[in-house]
Amino acid sequence: MDDKFKIVPYTEKFNILHQKEILRIDKDAFGNTSHIWSLDNFTMKIPYKEKLSFYLVHGPENIVVGFLIGSSSCVDASHLNRIAVAKNNTGNGLGKLILKHFLSISKKLGFTKTTLSMIYSKDNLYLLKFYENAGYSILRSKKDILSFLKSKNKLNELDQFYPPFTEGKYIVMSRLL
Ligand SMILES: CC(C)(COP(=O)(O)OP(=O)(O)OC[C@H]1O[C@@H](n2cnc3c(N)ncnc32)[C@H](O)[C@@H]1OP(=O)(O)O)[C@@H](O)C(=O)NCCC(=O)NCCS
Image (tube, rainbow, N blue to C red; front, side, top):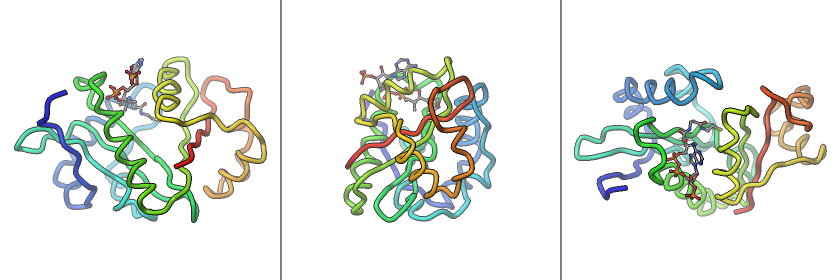
């Protein structure tokens, strides 16, 4: 990774200005495994989004090569909604870099834990390793999963989030800060 990569904070203006690059990265990253996001998904207002979302940019022209969209999910937890690195830049430590930044800012803001959910698929099992390397672990107890679903107003979706994990179901992961 060269030193021409940097992390810049999310703003709605930047998002709209760079929407073409951002939507392209999203499509390339999620087209096969999950639903892709529209501009509305990116600009939608959610608590703490402006403080917990970032872009990875490259060079003097600030070409977008990745993003992480975060928010809060309850009083003490931040939440990672989406992370992606442009296909031609993956495997260079950029994902790790932006995730580390998100964890550090989450902690600075006073959150004591952070959560995420991901689709279980044989095609993205490497993600488990990626998140486990960053200190996350899978929530397996009904109590913990219900507490997460409550914060997301999804209490009626327990079946989709509770083990055993099969193709298309969700895994919830959490990490103390
Ligand atoms: C997940 C993602 C953001 C990782 O970004 P990245 O820049 O490629 O990741 P890094 O280069 O920082 O790698 C960090 C670690 O994850 C591992 N890793 C990343 N991608 C991997 C892959 N495809 N296969 C195996 N390991 C992988 C790396 O080996 C590295 O481990 P190390 O620290 O032990 O060397 C990127 O692969 C991506 O955009 N994926 C598609 C979108 C997606 O699924 N997002 C998550 C939704 S929940």
